[in-house]
Amino acid sequence: MSAVLDPQLSDLLCAMPKAELHIHIEGSLEPELIFAMAQRNGLSLPYPDVAALRAAYAFSNLQSFLDIYYAGASVLITEQDFFDMAWAYFLRAKADNVIHAELFFDPQTHTERGIAFETVINGLRRACDRARSELRIRAELILCFLRHLSEDDALATLEQARPHIGKFIGVGLDSSELGHPPDKFSRVFAEARHLDLRAVAHAGEEGPPAYIWSALDVLKVERIDHGVQCLQDPRLVERLVRDRIPLTVCPLSNLKLCVFDSLAQHNIRAMLDAGLVATINSDDPAYFGGYINQNFVETFAALTMNASHARQLAANSIEASFASPAEKHSDHQRLAEFFSARGLH
Ligand code: ADE
Ligand code: ZN
Image: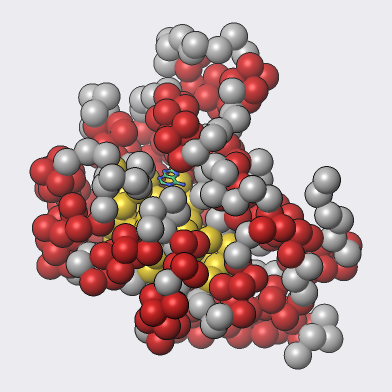
């Protein structure tokens, strides 16, 4: 039984301006688009229809999801496919009042299948540029390395990306966490730093607090993706609070991948209470039952959170973003105006 949220609070959550900082663009590929792309690219799928594919979205852990997620991404062939996928996301993000979005993409998922790196990045970048001009969403790309592959493979990917350096702002680390600690990627993150790229990493989704320490101290990341396991380690919490290291939390993802048994047991409210710079994001919305506003609404209902939590989370998302100081200043101002127009100061 899911809890029902006060309609006024629900409207506030949906209407408030926000940044989305943890969205895998391949995880926004809806079953309808998977089937449309398979058809136009002459590919056959191991599912008879959209309903059968959707019915397969029942996961027991991260790996059980990743197997289906990589299969879904195999329908992406042309630059137009990558554009269409990202554009569909931006239209949804606009409806959710996202004003700034940083999109993860997994080039190795595509280059492994013989798709050129430039096909991937040019399609995604074109959608980002159009989102900025037509939808007024500031949009950036973060290149993620797949941690189940080798560091040499990641280094080769960074080499392929080098001629496109102005098209993405940073690097990240995703895919199967357990057994693949961040320090496996120390050289490629050092190389990315030399290229003045920003750095983030998934850590503490299923993995232990030690992986968060390693992402901070070895990879020198500026944000932790997920990080929900940090509350097991008080010294780590102290460090994250002291250095204002943001955590991009994805409640519906954590629920669907069985990180928590129910949203009522999620620790995002405890994270905020501890003074952590936590944010709410969608991760892979086509697979986990909702985009960013759905994540806000369901989490607030389950944890009886209120308007001041809403404001804190929106402010955290702006602070945690890689927007410039001037852009952040204007986003914070916009947020303040939004709340004061509703009599909330
Ligand atoms: N790739 C897409 N979604 C992911 C997640 N939740 N964790 C790790 N890698 C991912
Ligand atoms: Zn993720």
